Length: 496
Image 1 (cartoon, rainbow, N blue to C red):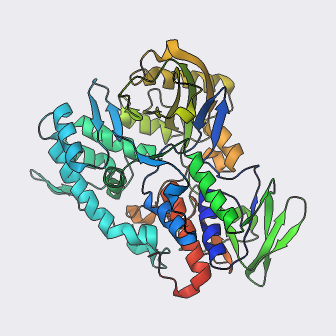
Image 2: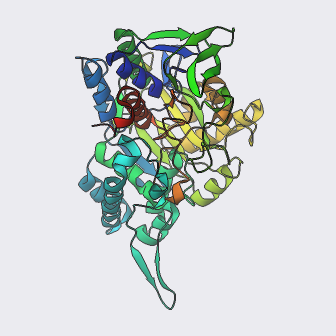
Image 3: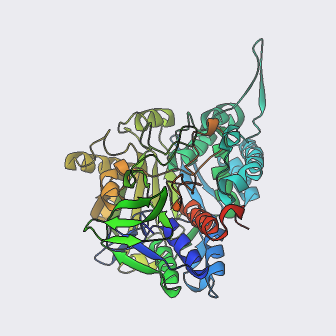
C-alpha cells in the first residue's frame, strides 16, 4: 500500500479482514493524508476537511472490519444549523440540518415567499439525479463503457423563450439563473460547487446532487476534530494487523511481465507484493502509461484543479451562544470569483467558509475560541503561494470577510497560522496542492476519475485521485471498491 490517506487505509482494513497481509508505506511521519491537525497553545485545528457528509460510508467500514461501531471510537454528531449563509446584500439565513421542510421555510422567511419552494423543487430534481447516478458514481467500479456516464442525469426544467424555442440548464450557473431565479439562491448553489473545487460556470447540472447530499444526509462533526476520524481508521487498521512504515517514500512500482510485483523505496529497498494499492496518483511511479487512449484522463492533465487557502485563528473571548458551526460568507460577485480562480489568479473578494466548532477539545478554555477560515483558490504554480507577502495579504482578505460571521474578529485575534496550496503540495505530494473534486456524471465524462484498477495487472488506485473522486466519503468508497476488486476479482460488481 502506497500512502496512508483515508482511501488507502479504508482499503487496508478491509483487505486485512479478508486475510491479506497488508503493509502501508507512507512518506510522511503520520497517517491521514490531507486530514491533518495543527496544535498550538492549547488551540486545535483541522487542516483538511472540517465536516463529514455521508457518514454511512465509515459506519459501513467499521461494521465490515470489526465488532466496534464507528460511534464507539469517535463522538459523531450532527451540527445544527447545518450552515449559515451571509449574502452580499446583507441577507442572512440559517439552514437546519437534514430537514428539507426546514430549509424551505428558512429560505422563504429570509429571501421572500416562493424562494424556499423553488429550492425545494430544485432539490427534488437533484434527488432524481442522485437516484440515477448513485451506484455507478459511488458503489460500483468504473464501467468499462464509462462514456455512458457522460450524459447528465439532472432532469432540467425546460424554459420557454419567445421565437427561440426551449432551453434547459446544462450547468450549475444556468440552474441558478433559469430555475432558481434569485441571485441569492444562485449564490447558494454556486457556493456548494465552488467549495468542492468546481467551476459553477462549467460544472454540469448533475453537481446539483452535492447540496442534495448535504441537506438530505446531514453535516456531521467529529468531537476533537476530523483528525479523530483518521485516528479511528488508523487504529482499526492496527487492530487488524496492518503494518505501517512511516518516513518511507516510494519512488518506483516494480513491474515484471506486465504486472506490479512490488515497490521500491528512496533508499533502494524493494518490497515484493502480490498486489500494490496506490493511495496517490501512481503515474510517475511506473515506466509506461497506466491508461490507454479512450480511458478516463487523470485529473490535472489539462489543468490543475483548485486548492484551499486556510487561515487558522486563535481568538480571545468566548464563542457567543447560538453561533453557527459553519458560516459561508458569499462573494459579492461569484462569477468574477470563479473566473479568477479558474484562470489561475487570486479572487479579490472570495467566498469564505468560517468554521467555529463548539468543542472544548479545540480551545485552551471557554474564554477562547479556535476558528478556521477557508477559500477555494487557484493551485500553487499559476499563483506563487510560497510568496510570504501574498500569503499575509490574502489572509487579511479572508479575515476581513469573516467579520460578517465572527463579532469583533480583529480585536479578538491573538495569532494566526496560514496554510496555502504550496503547503498542501509539500504535505500530500499533490501537484500544485490541488484538491480533487468528487466524480460527477455529465459533461461528457470530464469529471470522472480514473478507474480503481489499472492496465498494469495487480496495481490499483484508491483515494481522491481515483474513482469515485475527492472528499472523505468518496475516499472511503474508493477503499471499499479496491478491496472488492482484489478479493473478488472480476466477479466484483460493487459494494452492497
